[in-house]
Length: 419
Image 1 (cartoon, rainbow, N blue to C red):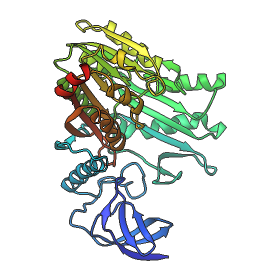
Image 2 (tube, rainbow, N blue to C red; image 1 turned 180 degrees about the vertical axis):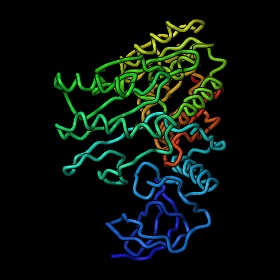
Image 3 (cartoon, rainbow, N blue to C red; image 1 turned 90 degrees about the vertical axis):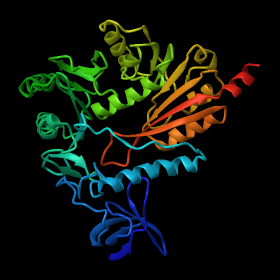
Image 4 (cartoon, rainbow, N blue to C red; image 1 turned 60 degrees about the vertical axis):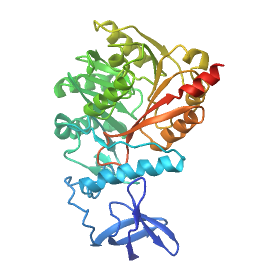
């Protein structure tokens, strides 16, 4: 049954919150102060219409915005959007009882996302290709994605559909990740499982027709016609299929600039959760770096890029699960600085080891404000001071935010610890 409510505020995921006699109701794609008509489903609601619009509302630029779950904030004017993201981070820090100056939000969208993941599903006799609707497994079929880099924007849906056509006999749900690299598209398909020889040969032919650089199934390369290279500083890296990559080129460059500026006086640096080296390869222009990452393929790619790039200081690599086996304080004490860039779960175990170490500088990069705050609080309780908090918006039009925190051990507490 439809009902009318007034939106009081926004939550951390950009949903509007209406207070009712039965509790808060969460409504997507609305703004504070708006009167809207909704249909409830428990504490969630579908938006039926906006009856009284906020002056901060604008027309979304994507024709799929109302249905697609990929973007959540295109209806916000830019100034309001920036303030909301900044305040969301400030609120998260306050909840963790952290007081630190938050710098202005840096827009790092650049030309757009350099990687998209499209879904192929067969809920009926037809094949459906696109993104998921919000809080649903329903596919919203798209012809283009306006927040992707220009080559991906128009071509990615067609590539996903062509691959789906070649694999549709199995009718398995497919997730097709397409990355725009220096040498063309790098495509990794998940969900199908092992291929028959006929399917493998068919995909090799398709990769040639689509002019793909590399085509993989579950990270296993079916064909590599050109090494799918990513430029990181002065180096050219070929990451493993489907491995972690910052969402935008400008986002990576911005984060790397903030990290290298913070570490410019450090001679020996540990780059933990290093991936294929977006920070390590830039830091090595001035410092020795020890890079640690769980995935051996990423470590191999980083080492190969380092050896092929003249003029870099030494980079050593170590494949290690930092959740189960964090670097211990005696190991950490060999470094002048530690860079952390963990997954969304954060780096709690590693932060606890840093807290009892003598490392003077920690640069924390996080894609989750809550785990950033948790890990920073651990360090601050042992004598680190959070000097800077820099929000970086490379996940534009979404609630997600990158945070860079620069933590320095206070000299007085360091001296007392050594005594």
